[in-house]
Image (cartoon, rainbow, N blue to C red; front, side, top):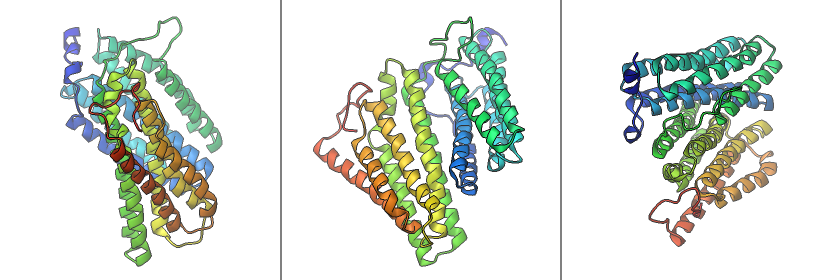
Length: 399
C-alpha cells in the first residue's frame, strides 16, 4: 500500500463527529462481554473473585478502548478498517466466551485470544499505515503487547493464585505503558503522533460504553424476573432494582455526563484528559457490573436471610458507580461532585445495619441514596441554573 493510500485511511479532524454504524456494531459484542463478567462474579462472589473480575474487566476494557481509538483515527468506511474491526469482533466474542472460566479451564483461551486481538491489530496497522506517524504508535504497541504476553501466557498455565498475580502485572504494565505513550529504550517519547480526536467524539464513545453497561443491568433484571416468575416480592424487587438503574442513568447525565466533550476539547492536554475520562468510565462500568449481580441477588431472593456478600455487592455496586461519577465530575469541572460524595458517605454509614437486613431492603437503601442525590441536584439547578456555555476543566461548576 502506498503512502497516499494510507493517507486516505486516516480521518481528518473535521470528519470525526460521532460513532459510525460499524463502531455501534462493534459495541454490541460488549453486551455479551459484560454479561459474561457479571456471570463470572456471580459464580465467584468472594473478595478474590471480585478482584479477578476486575482484572478481566480491565483487559476487556482495554480491547474496547484501543479498537475505539483506531476507529476514531481511521476511516471506518474503508474496507481494510472494516475488516480489522470485524476480525476484532470475532476475537472479542471468543475472549468473552472464555470469561466465566478464565481462572479455570479456559485461561489459555482467554490469554491467547486477548494477545491475538492486541498484537494482531497492531501488526495490521503497522502494515496498513506505512509512511504515517500512526505506524510508529502501532509498532510500539506491538512490542509492549508482546512483552506483556509473557505474564499472560505464563499465568494461563499456572495455578489460580499465580495466574491472578501474573495477569494483574500484565494489565498494570500495559495501562502504564499507554499512559507514557509506549516508551522504549533509546527512542524518544511519542508526542502528538496520534490524531487529535475531537472531544465530543471521545465523550460519545465513552457514553456508548456506559449505556452498554447499563443495558447489562437491565438485561440482568429482566432475566432474573423471567426466571423467578411474578410473585409479589419478586415484582417489588424488580421495580426497586429498575428504579436504581434509572437513577444511575439520571445521575450520570447530570451536567458532567453531558459536558465531557467540551471539557476534553478545552483541555490543554486533550489526549491525557481523554484517557482519564475513560478510566473514570471504567470505574462506573465496574460499578454497573457489580450492580447487575446485586440486582440478580435481590430478585432471586428478595426477603431471604441477610448475607454479607449480598449486602456488599448491592451497596458496593452503587458506591463504585458514585466513585467513578465523582472522578468524572472532578475531571470535567476541577471540583468534587458534592452530592455524590455525601452519597458515598451515606452508603458507608448504611453498610453496618444493612448487613442484618434482607436484599430487598439493601436495594431500597441504595435507591434512597441515589434518589437523594437526584433531588439535591434538582434543587441546586433551580437555585443556580447552568451557564449558557458548558464549563471546561478549569472553569468550575456546581458539580
